[in-house]
Length: 167
Image (cartoon, rainbow, N blue to C red; front, side):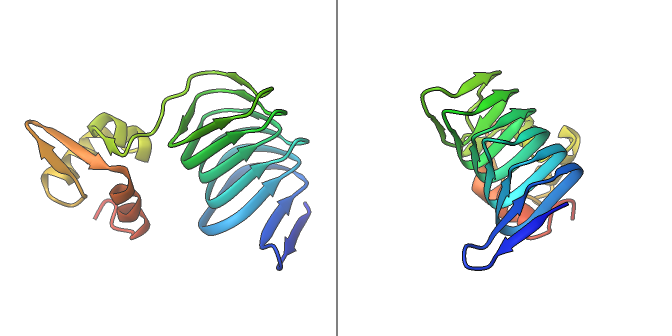
């Protein structure tokens, strides 16, 4: 496995075949040029290079895809599909930039700033009953609209980052 850290650019290059879960809690500039299978959660910037082949559930802030990706992609800020991108799976971006030539085989569901209970449960990958319990107890940021709860995505992200989830 080859990790190259370029301090002047603060980019972590992965040019190897890897399997498993990569989770970055702090912002990074990660570029994958090899093969990856598993789960990938990043803060900051993630680039899937033109030579990359990725089969994964991906979640990140800014994601740029130039290679092949199979799996669900959640981009909290921006998802860019370059002309060489081939994506098979559902994408859930806040903002989307598809450059001519990119191939997307799947569904696109845009992230909204306000989420309902079902959407926040899927977004956090948490049971709906837990979401309802936390909202009713005032343990998570939410606003009541009639009989429904609404959740601001940025407030939820901050709440999760603060470590208060489930407390």
